Structure formats: structure tokens, C-alpha cells
Amino acid sequence: MSNNRVVRLASRPVGMVVRDNFEVAEEDMPEPGEGEFRVKVAYISLDPAMRGWVAEGRSYVPPVQIGATMRAFAAGYVEASNHADYKEGEAVIGLFGVQHYAISDGNNVVKANTSLAPLEAWVGGLGMPGVTAYFGLLEVGEAREGDTVVVSAASGAVGSIVGQIAKIKGCRAVGIAGGPEKCAYIVDELGFDAAIDYKNEDLREAIKRTCPDGIDVNFENVGGEIMDAVLGRMNTFGRVAICGMISMYNSTEPPKALANLRSILVNRLKVRGFIVFDFVEKYGEALQTLGKWHAEGKLKLRQDVRDGGIEAFPDVLNLLYTGGNFGKLVLKV
Image 1: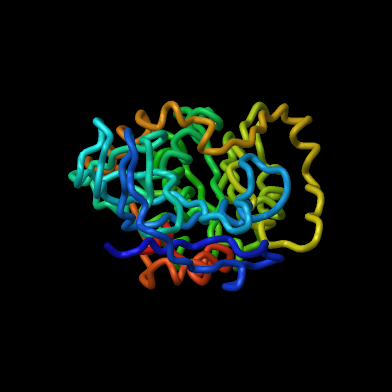
Image 2 (image 1 turned 90 degrees about the vertical axis):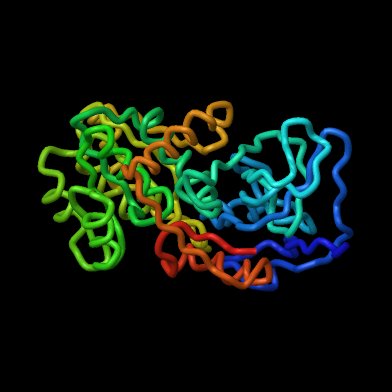
């Protein structure tokens, strides 16, 4: 039997990730023990949070340790099983890491219904990004019919789902994205009500134009100047769901302070940061609903699937921070 190939963290990046921050190693093929099963990984989810996972310091999860397998959500098939609930051939998604094979005891693993969508979609819009969008908008953002919802990085994995869920729930959806192609995509294909091209428009003027009645929910993925501009247009008792701060992830300088911080007080805003792990006990609810919406044609997914196997991981990961991907970035193993 062939060995397992694994991507390990070799050093902590400063600024952008470089190839030397990782090493590809070979290990003995892992064998499942009692109550365990082995997964043959087929697709790996590449997510902005990965930059924080490899940084040293306090965060919402412990950092990946030097020499450890790189953390990642992935989808694959059960290849060998000593677990009563997981049979050989079943499609599963979980935190399997950047490797060809993984051992699991089933904790926080979800079965993927490939009759509703192909496997790669279950690490995309129907996986962690979709679950993040679902709970972030509906529970953290408390979006309700008639609200104006603004989402940054709107053509990305999470943002594209946020806007669509907003429309399903009867909200007005405004997306902030970079470039005419991405802006056209979220309006013409995904059904957003309006798009703001932060690269080619005056951001504050565009927000005022597209949100004439103010903003009730800000789903924040970017931070920095974009978040500052949105805060200035928030309605009284608005909600800010902070999902990400991608504009700061590779910065080597301290971030600038928000100029519109006073808006939180003046407008009595509810501001909450959250991560997908906050809702782990309810993943099944989100996945079932997202899968149903997709099957009904209400939820469109766009995966940016890259070849190259796990050896390509460092280079493909950086596409997230340069805007080089269009849709949910997935690495085919």
C-alpha cells in the first residue's frame, strides 16, 4: 500500500505565505483503530482563516504547530472503517487537514449528500463557507424581511452565499466586490440588488447611492477602509456580523483605527465577531437547508477548483489574498 503524503507547517510566515513555510512529507499509511475510519481526501477547502491558523499568538483556535499537518477542511470518501456509523464508500466532510489520507473517529464529521451536489460543493457553498454565511447572517446578523444587508467580499465563498440567503429571506442585498466582472456576477447571476466596485468607485458615495435607506445588517469579511465606510451608513439598532478581516491578514504594520467607530455608540449597533465553530452543534440544520435551497435552484454555487495536488497548496492559498480566485477556492488532491 502507498504511503500518505502530508503538508506540514515548516515555519511561520511574515506577510504573504511562501512555499518555504511548508514542507511535503511522506508518512506511513494510517490505519484506523477501533471506532475509527480512514478517509481518502479528494478536495481541500482553502479559506482566508488559514493565514491566522499559521500565525503565532492568541486567536480563536490554537495555531498550527511547527511540524504539524496543516489544518484544513476537506471532503473525501471513507476507504476503510471500524466505525459503525461510517461505511466504506460514503462521502464525508471534516477537518481532515492537507493530506492524502486522514483518520477520524467521526467527531465533527458530516456526511455529504452527493445526490444534491457534487463532492467539491460540500467544501464550498454547502460546506464551511455556506454554514458560516447561514449562521452569520441569520443568527449573528439577525437578518429579517425588509432589511438592507451589505456584505463585503461579496463574490467570495462566504459573501456570495450571504447575499443569496438575504434574498431568500426577503432582504435587499448589496455586495461590495473588486472589479466589473465580479460585480456583474453577483447582480446578474446571483440576484443581488446592487453591487459596489470598491476598486473603481468612490466607496462612500456608492454606499450612499445603493443604500438610500441606510444599512440594517453589515456582514463584514474585509475590515479596514471598507468596514469604516459601511459603519458610516448604518441604521439605528443595526447589526454588524464580523466574519473576517482579510485586508489585515498579511499586513506587517499595525492596522489603522476605524474613523467611524463612534457610529457604534450613536446608532446603538450590535457588533459581534463569530466563527463557524460557534455553531458546530447545529451544522446539520444548516447543511440540510443549504442543500435543499441548492436542489430547488434558489442557491447558486461557484467553485474555483485548482489542480496540482497538495504540492500546490502554498501557491494556491495565496490566491485568496491577491484576489486571484473567483468563487470558492478548492484544491483537488
